[in-house]
Image 1: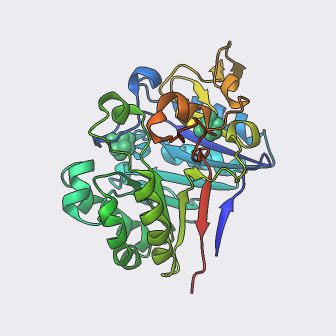
Image 2 (image 1 turned 60 degrees about the vertical axis):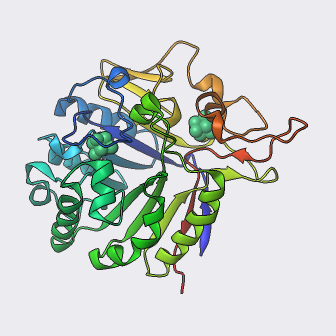
Length: 333
Ligand code: SF4
Ligand code: SF4
């Protein structure tokens, strides 16, 4: 069954970068230290910021991110704090290195998912993107997590250099007992934006031809598959998550964004001051959310207009969806 995951303001989603440091140097890394600093948040600050978002909504979900969040020695304390504050779900995103013996310090009763990242179905392709040894370490990390009873998900960031292997990853997911599979589109942020590394973004034709079919194939194995919608027909409704959802992307220098596409710029609409959220002065991302343009997402048009296309009379051929809009497939027989 395929469905578009609707935006909702009834749940607060907290994407919490507790540090920007990482042991890997992935080719498409979106962390931008010039914008987001190099500091590691003290546990007292993490706890205080978790409190702020827990009280925003009756349902709040947190994803701990980095850099590599397991490099933070106090991650187990942050997880316990989130649990005690009543967060509905707690996820740890990891590159698989699982530092500080994290699997022994948190419990499957508390963590909803350990979410691993692999960017290839083979050692060769993954390690070319994420670094030598990262494939084997990630596979071993997944096996250890499953053995300890954790639910696991896998994130595959699709680019022109690994899209050919998406189709081949299904047996590996099955072998590893992965519960959920997330396909991500490469963002033109961080390193990808700096270098434009020989067009990492896949074309619309390739995306539409390959992604939905690969997702269906994987879903047939009983794995829940989620992928970004990316392209909308002119008839489909466009919504900006900045207006109709309650998402927060927090960085260790105190910046809080509502839109991930804004993260390479000082456009954050909120900032932590003395552990309380304050509005930032205009112009900020909020000023873009309400702009109604035929191309759909305003930030996409500003920072990656190459994925737009126009008819000879100047009208758009299609719209670009909000980068947070996802399709989900489950229970395919
Ligand atoms: S594991 Fe994540 S944070 Fe680390 S280099 Fe790769 S993409 Fe960047
Ligand atoms: S990606 Fe575009 S549509 Fe989504 S929140 Fe940002 S500006 Fe809005």
